[in-house]
Length: 206
Image 1: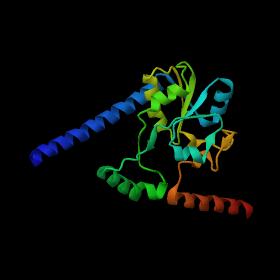
Image 2: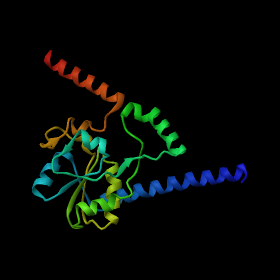
Image 3: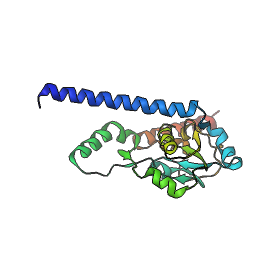
Image 4: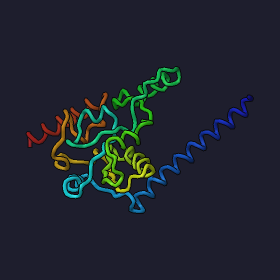
């Protein structure tokens, strides 16, 4: 295959990925715009769980869940660590660590192919009210599309994710960290701790 042909195939592949990503994002927006999925801000989440019968479905990866999780929530990760050891994946891991992993502590992930079946094992009732949550509200939107296609009828979205929550929004949190900081790791975690320390020090000196 000539270099020109290879270039055309690469360009076509890139275009198709862009089109698919745009279509997927549009579908996620439509779920929210149509009212099929209810957006619930973190400040109203505890009331929805307590009084409206919602179950909290946490789709964050395991390392974020381990840092902090809402008591009683159901954990099914949408993305899992990519444990493949082929040369291409190893290269991806090296690049990921250099640009993202070292700073954020995030591992290279891949989509959890068993996500829908694992949710069905945990919550068999497709009419159950599910409040789907992640760190920043992006992965949960992808999960909502999967769940909607899988037949779940009463879906809610934690708008903005746990990162926008405050300590009082979820009174019963387990783990060693705070929900709003669970996505932060690596070198950035130490900067966060320094910032929090300086904030406390400033208040004490007021």
